[in-house]
Length: 432
Image (cartoon, rainbow, N blue to C red):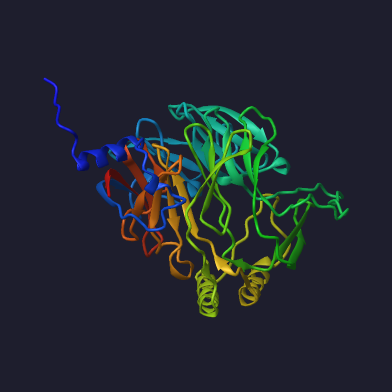
């Protein structure tokens, strides 16, 4: 028997949210100036991590988390140089990697990612650097050596549909052998201050720059520290003046391989195709907040307070070229204090604080709160075609550290003692 009654408005609204296919010109993100409230219904699932517990659940430094296609959560613990894998109920499945210098062992864990086929990769920032690849059961499969002089990935890697890895550019490294000097020609590439979004292949080939993101011109470098290592190499570090409220560089990957990029002070998300061209832009007409004198004073005070909390008031410097023959700790601290006192500010605060793409290709775009508070702004949800779905309030779910299948969302939490836990919830519905 066929039901001939027309669908109710409530049912139509639900179908629009589920299929994301309804066309409503009033929900064009570029023209919608008033927030449409969304209410999220969530379900807590499990939390892992403990100060005292089994070895796998005592974390050293959880740098990132990622779900695989089965809903298993991969917890990258850079402090323990490993990946801890738990199932959909939080039960320990396996541990991938261990610290060491042998095959499949990690010397200096820097970044990790789960590939589309379920294999896992840890970038070992050791000597030599390498992508260490493990199969779906966590067994070591192979190692791909990487030359740090030709590019280092950022701490967060994403997988493209073709199996390559895309990442915001990591640290720029130049290592010189004893007696070898850097190029003093003074020539710089045009717009060298731009920030690279890099693509790495797991076949040993060099990195490829997918897109050169916008950035403000650099401030003048006015601090430097130099020294030597026990191995005869040289160490030189230069520091530009500290600048607050720089435009964010944020990325997320859509299922078709396009990379969503935030690199602006304005509310603007670029969609970069796999050939590096800008395929589209998502915008909302939200004006950046100006940087006032009160904001500057509060920012300096917060930075100085944070500096005093670093490792009993000190700063620890780790190198990969040996112990440095330089009393660098106190120099670093004094330099940081001078940098904070003389820091420069942008004229405006960037509108966007964070960005992520969920499994349904919806963009979650967190906005800055008052005075640049990253945690006090609302979160917009917009489709990749620019359809504005609505806005979650500041007390609603924040952008998670990872999205997973079936509405899974994972958050990395830390208590007052610095003990890290990973909390997983399920997003049941979004109602507006």
